[in-house]
Length: 384
Image (tube, rainbow, N blue to C red):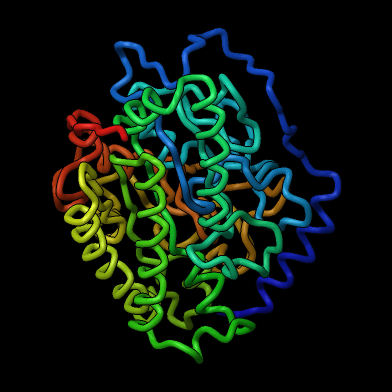
């Protein structure tokens, strides 16, 4: 990938963001008038709560208040189709976890940065743009919250909940909650493929995938030890087909090299999930096949209502992918017809489709069971 694009974006964003919209950190004051019981669920809720870990594909504001972070989306036109306006979501509207939360009967899950006490009733989103499985990933964007720190943030939430409910009740509740994890994209886009990282000279594709998934398995086991039992793992999509990569292709076509680069990671993750299900008693890990979903969307775009599949709705340069969506830039008016919102992220329309497929789709898209089946699964709990 071209380093100049990233450095230009970082400098330009720093200049333009000085007068931008910034989220406010809320500590301890919930505006909800709902139930005061931690992780309690109503009859319409399939699970007590959902806890979310990931990167910019599902970040909903955790980077807003990070000092010196260039990975932010708390300005228009991000959120142009979202009821709350710009929140930090890297989308014009919903992310995939917004759609899944809605189908689970939950409210939209708040970010950790503005969640405390009763605000965590239905779960917390810990995802952070530019974050990776590896702590060093994404450092070009300076401020970000790697997966290891996201897990530590979950521990903070867990301590708060335990103080209210007690350890036994928390363990029983957590066993019914959904844990949604989508990591790995930045370990390629903002690590392996970046010229100022040595990673590509140190590892071939298989070796790097082995390194990532070895670390990933340890992190997910740590979540299990903290109480996670129902875990959704999202595979990597066709990253060689995003506008940022398309813009670097003389032919404007998908990069076979990049798509093949991430294939060992997805293959390793599937093996990892089988091993975790075998070795961690009472757990159920499932896999969302994002690559298959995107292949289907690109191959059958017109049947889904999409007419533009090779450029972003908001961005600058070739394929609107050389520079990603900038503050107050005018996006395309026909956003429902675009697969990509900016240089890196899908539109809300795509996120909704993929959320539905993950929730109740067949095993071509998610396996061994879907999220709806996972939510209904009865998992026995044991307490020490």
